[in-house]
Length: 118
Image (cartoon, rainbow, N blue to C red; front, top):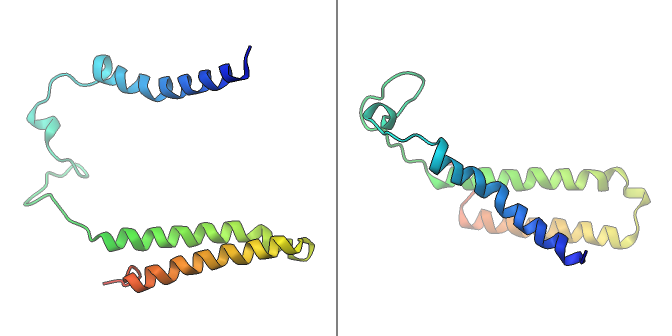
């Protein structure tokens, strides 16, 4: 078999696996009859009183994303810090470049006001 056959099969299976449940849900498995009880908002078994639409500020999500980025940064830098005395010079340069790029992102987020908790 040609090596491109495996790539084609991989792409085909990559389309079938997520597509099949979506199609099965819409054709066979999904609910057919909507009624007011199914369409009503549900929270902790208590019917909502008043307006159920609550709008959150997007700054909270941006703050959380910045936190996740720097949390993942520590995961990437931990192995480097453990083996710092055994790495070559180019690895130190790469780590400094990585930290510089993230520091630039932090400076950008700071200037845009994404770190303001208001």
